[in-house]
Length: 381
Image 1 (spheres, rainbow, N blue to C red):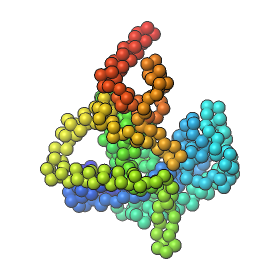
Image 2: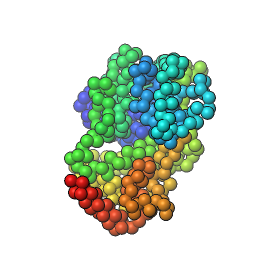
Image 3: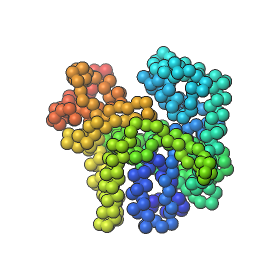
Image 4: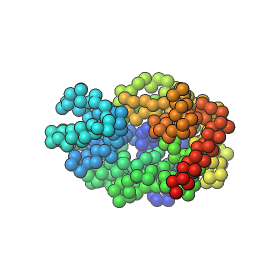
């Protein structure tokens, strides 16, 4: 908000759902920045990717869809928020991706009838998105606006600005907690500010305690009673554009947890202001907050890990993965053989070790593992 004030930003638009917690905190500081308006806007990758497609032939679908072995074609194509059953049968969508059939998906997306279908759906979605942006004030040539998001590749930022440029509106700037190495550049996605750049890990390896937790951050900050936005529709009664939400599993338990969580966060923000700790924000951030969070990522205490027992990660309504794993006999064999395959299964490997074992045993395991890797390098040389 200080940076926004310095750069004469008129409005900050916090993106659903990752921006909701940040929005709650920002509202507590609103009185310090009366010249900046704060807005919460319903967008997601699923509501942006399709409208951002202008010409299918120029689209890198593997970059957008991020297909992964084990997913079904339905799961992969889900990111486009299109009902492909209109042009293809259920059997095709149920095929699971493996190393040998990736070309099937590519061939499907290159068919002329599929290209035409996607572009037609994209045009309809884009018209609604532009109307929604204009209605909410994001699409404007009078005010200088910026979006606020948690982390990522800045692909959503690029698609937002692509659509705004198409409709002859001013680009918006962006604020992030973290951007990854493979992020979109300023020349293609617009101006942005970030607290963390992934390459900083080269200067401070301890930061890996934060960077390895991008799944946790995303799931924590998006933990609300809201559903994922997948598109927009116009209400006949009011003529307003409203978001369309995805049908997900019951949100009752999540809503209860997030309500308590949000109340705690808002209370903390109020105390932070009342005690004037914000005057020492930079000092606290670098001397206390970062080291604590980094330590949790690198060497977490078992008692804190209990809070994540039963915590699941999800990118869509089809797949859920546990964040901490309770190891069985087969897993222990892999671990004692120093297999790194376990680290590619999606769950938090380091946290799972500390969750299953005594801290001293895990520390000894990592020390032994480090020695073995060093010996292997020396032998190779």
